Length: 491
Image (tube, rainbow, N blue to C red):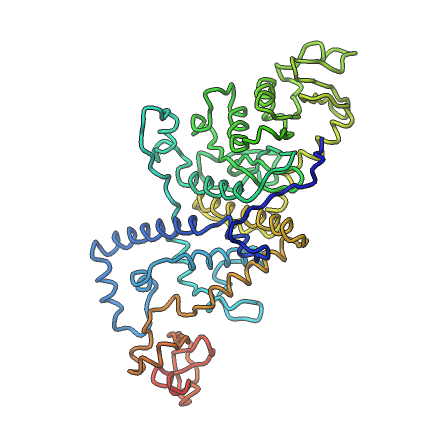
């Protein structure tokens, strides 16, 4: 079953040094292209929100309304600078941190106490974080020119009114292509389902009582059985979208899913072993995989109509259906293994139990300090799932490339530190260029000034003059008057 070649992963990173950081591995998957799509769509969406609130002339209205105020709202900053890639990346870093350190509510991360290890006001102000959470919008499916060769199902997939997955399909497809770009699968691969927990109202939601989280969205995953690397994925729309994953050459929905997941694997010179459970299995599927050059092993259900009648009788432990060998195993339950190569039943059982755990192990990695949180917007669950998958894949790639073993928690901590260090390199990202214009006329000195003064409700003693003040310097954490601000900082 195992290949004689010990090389599991071939990484081809053009123009990249071998010593990449954790963040650089993560950015291989969550690339600039994906960030750029989120930035473009989020800016368009929030402009639409402001247009509905203020009208078509919303820019001039907001600029005029807040031009003379010493402190600005984030609507003002959005109009003047918009959402950037750095904002989305910092937002992801905060989400990863929230997965490692669970607080009762989101606002608790911005409170000033000794429990907070990170000063989030320096990383990203609270109001701007919630603006991003509101404005974050998924990229729409790319428009394709309709030709005569395009099938009806392909047209339905691009139609937002008919395809319930149109919000997240393009995002998952981009991630899957990046997963496949930097990794070569080994000889053993696993296909299984994963459930993203969601209890809100949605037509695509599944109920699977055997899962730890019984309600949620089903995603079919293809993983490497040995390294547990996620290679391909397919979102299941349940009854509301069967036509979107049904192949014309397939006799069942499960058969269509397996063939779609295996479509990117075109290396016919290398025979890979495919493992999947009874939900996907059928004799017809195994025959198709054999023609495509795959070895495959599965378990047939006891009530399957494709089981030969003689194997159900006593005294018959094996049966042959063309090239498919079916073997009975008597344990706590009677199990029927089906495979397209000859092997002893005990060896087949042991190998199947080990190699069929690829997706289950990947699911266990996802549950370690997961960034998933409760939300009413179902597509944000898929967005966070994609981030979790990118983190686990980057960790696996990091270990294979460098030879260093690390835990998921340590890898996430290193990733957070690098994202926050990148965001803090430009401390004025969330403020206008001349925020202290009313404080001093010396703009040359203020051009390189990075401290931020804000109005607060609680009064304090001004460090410069000793009188009560309602303004505070967030960098120095002291109360100051606006007039005393340049005096305290020796301006």
